[in-house]
Image 1 (cartoon, chains in turn cyan, red):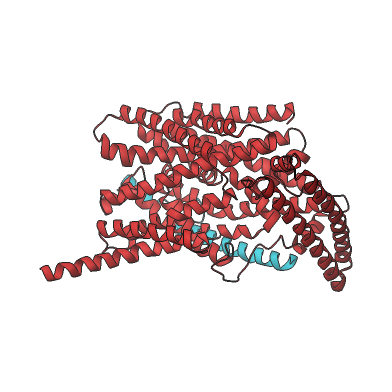
Image 2 (cartoon, rainbow over the protein chains, first blue to last red):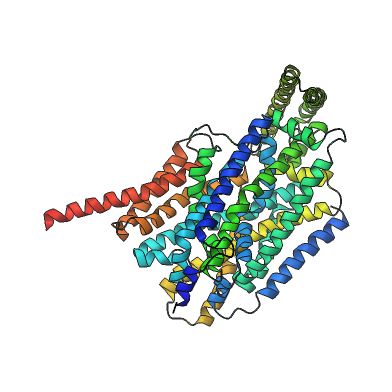
Length: 45
Length: 566
């Protein structure tokens, strides 16, 4: 049996099944945005 | 403002306040009052985090910043998503497991009471003053542009927030922040669309971007490392990461938001939502500023956007001199318009030589215009040495009030009020949590009843509200308000984060060593601020690194002193 605290800590995210994948999405999103912004800067320079 | 604007403004604000009071009417104890009984879903946590961070200054200053300096300010937020992930992995589960009300409670279990109290004290100073600036900032701008009285506007903003924060606590704050964010995002989106729509018919959206780019306003990313440059990728990623880690991990105004999540997962989702949305949102706000810039390439802008100062100088001995400069500016504007038209023509032919020539012509016109503006600023300063010659904060609202249609002006003023109220409410709430939990309950009345703490929480919220309104009333000129608030935060955040880094990662460090290391580091940061030109974002990693380093040194020194005596 899990306690409420353990259940809380082990709670799965609603999408992608693991928290690691959720974190990866946030970080990949940042990298993609920086690259897009860089392309945007170069294009309109 | 027309009567339609007044109806939109009063209707929007009244609805949000009444909704907040109604939602927060059933508080029974301080867990309810300070943490909404840990019941909020992730989207409420996420919107509440965003609304607390994004003050009115964000929506007034950022477009003005883009107008004058381009879009590079967005890099300031690059460290934020990384910080969100780090917090989700480390602090969020710990805070939930310990069932703390404030971030500083944890420090006593790890170190001692004095270290907890020091961190709480640094937070209260920093947050108390910056909340005053957060009230003053929109008040001074609204007063200048709409002719309202600054002091009365400050009092009005403070009192409106107090109405629902005193009665409803965190539950009222979180629910009103959801409504406020909806108003803000709708208002800003409409303003952005209309700004592009107001461009001349022959200028397409792509043409507008080309003009902004050739004028150096679409300079979003700069990879060149320069510690004295406030905004580049590295200062944003490293300095911004530490600032965000400290702000979201140790500043009670944010910790309180995600501690209200119904579980670790809901709090994490709220933070990750912010990590995904914040950078594109800032980009969009800055982009509106560049479109305002393009708009003013086709419509004569004022030399200086603070009309109150302009009126003062026009009514003075220097009036004729200023009007002569305005006439010169008008002539230069004709030249600039021709240069922009040449640039647009050259861009259509795709001829590199013609584009370069038109760009050079545009840059020359911009230099001439800049030189006239500099002279105008000197005249303003000569007339009134106390005048604030930074008009960044007035650019966007001047555009809104002069060009947007009736109804939308009221909505945009409601955006300013909503943003201001959302961040101020979060701040009042956090000041109350820290005062009641870390000061009153811990040091003054540890054994009182829940009802007593609930009543005291309401009085303390009122007290901090009055204090912040007082700071707002005595706030002087602080230049770019967005930078000022972040600068103030950076003075303290690095040290507070350093204390938490010791708590989590430096097992050897004892309470006294960390306490004295934090005090010394705070002095060092003040010295850096007063005596060097180091960009303020770097105070965060410096403070965060110095506290653990000094704590380890002090611990080592103490151990060496013990050995001979043993």
